[in-house]
Length: 376
Image (cartoon, rainbow, N blue to C red):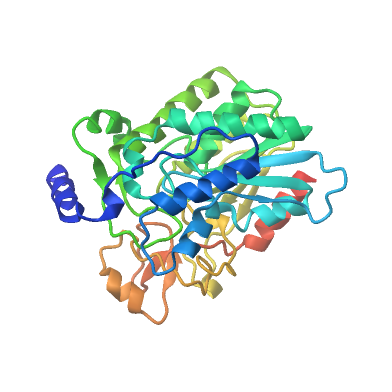
C-alpha cells in the first residue's frame, strides 16, 4: 500500500519542475572559495525550480556563505559547516555568528543535489558530497593553521568520517549527528532505489529546504551511517567535539548517539548538550537542558530545533514559516490558520494542544554560551 501511494503521488506531481532533474550539474572545479560562490550562484540561478515570487531571496537562502570575525588580525582558524539531507547552508545562519565571535572564519557549503529542486537528489550520492567536503578542506588548509569541521544530521556524519580519516582536523561541532537512525527501514533504501524514485512526496513550500525525499538520497544517507559506524567500531575520537542532541529527535536514535559519545569521544573537554530528561550516563561532560518550555509553548525539541534562534526571521518564534507537517494526524490547514500553536518534535501529541514542528531553539542563548565556552 505504501509503494502504491508513492507511485500515485509521483504521477500526480510529475508535471511540477521540482520533480524533474535539472539540466545542469553543480560546479566541481574552483580555485578559491570566492570562485566557488560565483559559480554556485550562477548554477542556482539557472537551475533552481522557484517556489515563491521572490527568486532572488530563494537563491540567497540556498547559497553557500563565508563569515569572518569582525577583527581579523592573526585569524588562524576556520570551520567548514555541512548541512543535512534536503537542507541548505541556511541551517547555520544563526550558528555562524557565534563561531565568528570566537575567531573562526566560517564557511558553509551546499552539497550536490541541493538548493535547486528535490529531483536532483535522484543522482547525487554520498561520494559527491564527500568529494566536495574534501575539496573545501583542502582550500582551508592552504589558508589556516587550524581547521575544524561542523555538520547537521547527515552533514555531521560526513564531517565526522573526514575527521576520523584526517588527524589534522582540530575538532568537531555536531548538531543532531545522525550516527544511528531511528528507523530500521532506511537500511533497505538502496535496494528500494532500484524500483522507486521517491520515498516521500510533499508540496514544495519551504524555500530553505526540500519537503520531498528520493530513495537514492535515503540510500546515500545510510551509506554515511555504515561508513561512520565502521570507523567507530575500530577507533575512538580523541580530539575536541561538541555534540548537540534532542531526546525527542524523530530522525536520530539519540540515546544510541549519546552512548557513542560517552564511549567513543574520549577527549576530556568534549561536550554533549542534551535536550530532555537526564541521561543515565555517568559522564560529567553531559549538560542537560529541559526540553519543555511552556512559556514559549514548546513541548519537545525537534531534530532541527537546536540550530535556530527564536529571533530568526524565517524559522523563529514569530518567523514567517510555520512547519505544520508534523505527523499528528490533523489537517495542515488547521495548524496554518491557527492564531496560536504549540511546538514539538515530529509526531508529538498532547490533548488540547495543536503542535507545529519546532523550528527554533528555546534555549538558544544557553546553547550559545555553552558553545562559546567550549570553543574558548
